[in-house]
Amino acid sequence: MWVTVYETDNEAYDIWNKEVGVPTERIIRIGDNKGAPYASDNFWAMGDTGPCGPCTEIFYDHGDHIWGGPPGSPEEDGDRYIEIWNVVFMQYNRLADGTMEKLPRPSVDTGMGLERIAAVLQHVNSNYDIDIFKTLISKAAEIVGTTDLTNKSLRVIADHIRSCAYLIADGVIPSNEGRGYVLRRIIRRAVRHGHLLGAKETFFYKLVPTLIAVMAEAGQDVKEKQANVENYCVWKKSNLLVR
Image (cartoon, rainbow, N blue to C red):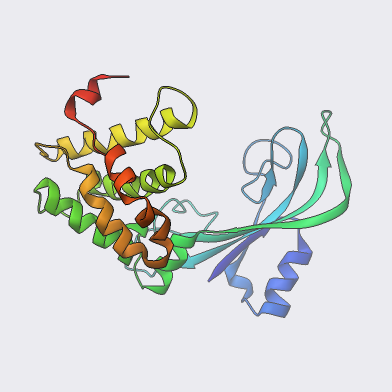
């Protein structure tokens, strides 16, 4: 595990080193690397004004068999070191003139990548190699008739069937506006990738049973509305021509 802290955040640095026990060589200070004061990968803000503060990010090293360098290095965009967690110390309010005033009630805002944690626990280095996606990708390949499980179009289809199914189960339906339009575009994109792989007929809805199976208890909402979900995931080739 590696961590980054904002360059001047000695408190976070000391906590990681002295209380958690992270070696100093695995704690990296990141300064203002985006051309302006407080413009840093390790300083989070909602926008030009409003609540903000330094953050510390947690990275997992997937091993030297994967290309990439630690955060802050020229090779940081590789896939070896992956951010899995972010902790923001929300302690300032930035005003329009750039002034930083301390918040009366500072807080901690934290977020963790669920699928990235799953990849770590399952000893794989890609979200698409975790059990849920591997099963969906294999089923999608079977349905569209391809044997190339590394094709990125299969990843698109596997990702999109999950998002579409849960949106529909929550009451969103394909339409020409708002959330429905977003759903419609996601379905259309998935179907287009299926056709790129050679799908000759409507296929997207056929992934719903597999999705329900792999999601187990978390798939009960979709299971209860399976017929409705499948109905809206039936997308004919002619629909691709409609914007």
